[in-house]
Image (tube, rainbow, N blue to C red; front, side, top):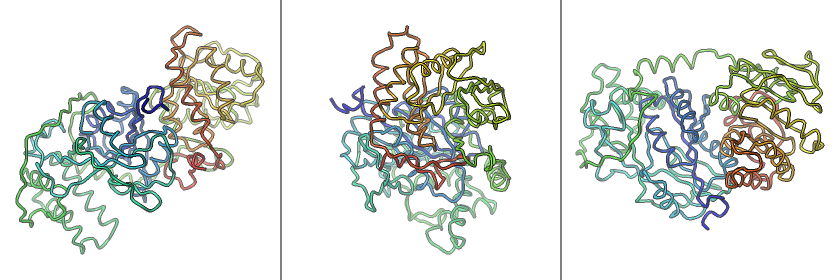
Length: 542
C-alpha cells in the first residue's frame, strides 16, 4: 500500500504560507488551496488590513486552516519560512510540503490529480511548479480577484518555479528555504528539483491599481531599508521608476497595469524606458470556483495601508505578560491564542492549575470565566482573573456546572491508577466538549495508557487539532505530549475504529520516534517561531 505509514494510505500534504495585507485575494486563495491540502498553515506578517480577520474566519469555517503571527522586524521571508517548516514538519511529519504566497493557487481542482503529480517527485527532492502569470487587461476586471483575470502569457519571459518538498514523513532540521520559496538547500547544497509541467501554479501578482500602488510603495521602501543607496543600483531601477511615477503625481493607469502584468518577472523590463514588445497572451481562465463570505475583493486604500503600517512601527505595544511574570516558568502564548481565537471559549476550567499562569493567559486572551482548581492556597497563585477552588486533586469534586474547555496540563505520567481515574472523572464531569491534556513524560507507553483511560470515559483524540497546537508550541513538553480530546458522540465502547486508529495510532507512532528533550527556556513566548531560544523541534533531530 502506498504511504503505508498512514492509516488512510494517502499522503499527508501540508501548505505553508506567509501573508501580509492581502485582503482582496486571501479568501479565494485559502478556499481553493485548503481544499487540496490536509492543512494550510498561514503566517500573518503584521497585516494592518482585514487579512488576519478573514483568515481567522476561515479557520473557524474550514477546520484545516491554522493561523499564527510573525510580526517582529529583522527577519527575512526565508528565515521565517525555514523556521515554520521546522515547526510544522516536527509536528505533522508530512509527506509533502507546499510553499505558497497569497496570490498563488495550486493549478488543479482535483486532490487525486494533485497527488498523482506529487508522486513524480523523487524522495528527498522537491517538485518545481511553474508560475502561470495572469495579466490585467483593465482595472475594472479585477473587482473580485482572481475572478475576471482570465488571460495569461502564452510563454513566460523568465520561467519561475516554486518548491514542493517531498519528505515522506521525515523531519530534517537542516533544511533551509530560500528567498521566495523557489528552492531549498540541505547541508549547503540545493536539493534536486523535478519539473512538474502538468502542475502549474496559477499566479495573480497584479490585481488592480490600489494593490499595485501599495506594492510599489512598499517594494521601493523595502529596497531602501535593505540598502540605503539602492537608488544607485540597476537592480532597483524597476521599483524606483514605478515609485517615482506614483509619488510625483501621474500615478499608475490601466495601461501601466497591463504592461507591468505582461512583463511580470521579466528582469530586463523597466516601466517607461524598456522597448520590449508585449508578449503574446492567451485566454485561459483558471477553474477557480470559490465563494466569498468574509471579504469583497477590494484592496485597502494604499494611503490608509501605509499610514497604519507606519503607525504600527512607531506605536508602543504592551506585552501580554511582563518578563518578570515568568522568571521560572514558560508561558506559551501562540498555541493557546490560536485555540481560543478558533473556538472563542466563554469559560475554561484548569484542573491542577499550579500557580495559575496558563489560566491567567486565557483570561488575558479574553475568556470571561477562567476557573482553576488545585491544592495550593490562593495566595500562592499568580492568578489575577477568574476564580479558584483549593482542593485535594486525589478526591472527586463537582462545581455544579460544565465549562466549554477543560485544561489538564503536565499530568504526572505514572500517576496511581485510582488517582488517574479521579482526574479523568473530574475533567469528564466538567467538560462540555473539549479537554486539553498533556503529560510530564510523553513516552509512548504512558501516552497509550492515558488515552485508553480517556477512551473508557468516551473521549478520543482530535489528531489534526492536536498537531496544530504542537506545531505552534514553544514548549518541548507540549510539542511532544499535548493531546486535544473531544467527547465522542458514539456510545462508550463503540468508537469508530478508523477514527481511533487515525488519532491514537498516529500519536503513538509519533511518541515512539527518537526524541531528546531539549532544556526548557523560561519566559514569555509570544512568537516562538522567531525566538533564538526556540529549539523544541530539535528533539526529533537528535
